[in-house]
Amino acid sequence: MILIEQDKGEELLFNVSIESSIGTPTVVTTQNRGMNAEEWAELAVNRIVAVSANAPPQVREQAFAYKTMIKALLIDYFDKVAKSERSTAKTIWDQEGLEGLMNYFEDI
Image 1 (cartoon, one colour):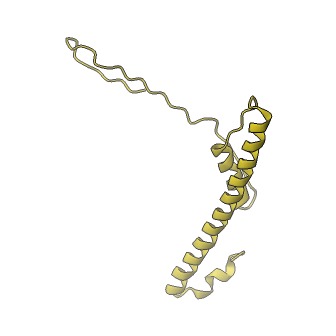
Image 2 (cartoon, one colour):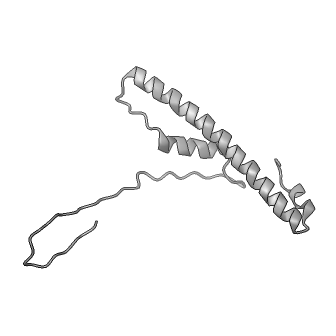
Image 3 (tube, one colour):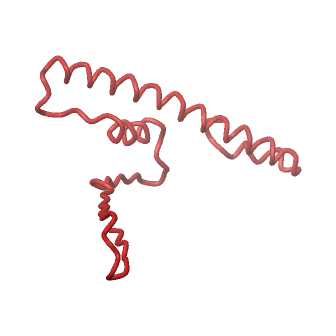
């Protein structure tokens, strides 16, 4: 909350009250690995697209179709990000004389 003070003799110009909420936190765990693109996309799409239980059936159907499309798009881009990061790491390691280091990483 933000409180703006003024002198006692001054006329009140405005009153500001701001509240914020981060929403419901989501906790996801994996065992012996990081999260993959599909898992990140599922988390992201659930934050991006919300479908009301009270929405008319046609609207809900469209919203779920849109959600599926956005998730597929996110998976594609997350996969591209991972490949790009591996490519950048390989280039840097090659420049530093560590040419064989990428052989230890899977899915290159």
